[in-house]
Length: 148
Image 1 (tube, one colour):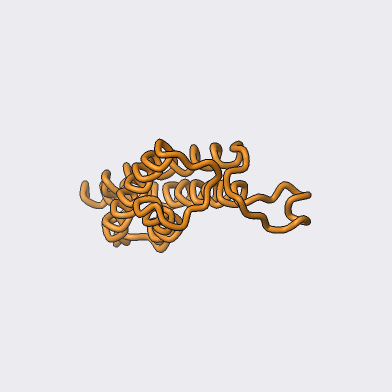
Image 2 (tube, rainbow, N blue to C red):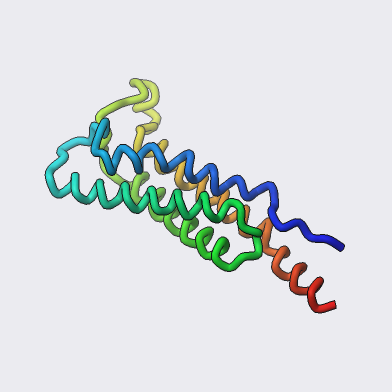
């Protein structure tokens, strides 16, 4: 019995890149981020955060092609689960810092850019958990195949 090395759910790593790379590039270049009350300190922290985001995107791109049972790929997935979970929590609980709105109707339902961005991170965290659970039998099946 042959076990596939990569599940179709592995595209979650590319989805992480699509969600994060625009902010990572803008953060490093400090271009086009209209956050409220930016100081020199927040600009430096934003550049450091942008560097971290780009690093996670590179790690995700490198992990995309690896077999699902690789410990390094699974470690990166755990890191991204934790990152997206914490980021979601921080963004949803944060005060308004993005000076744009989706309109009065959205504001009455508390739909703000911060909440939408936080929700996207929460969904990404769930996607990585789903990938983890969907590929969990793979290492066991591979090990069982080798033992025979």
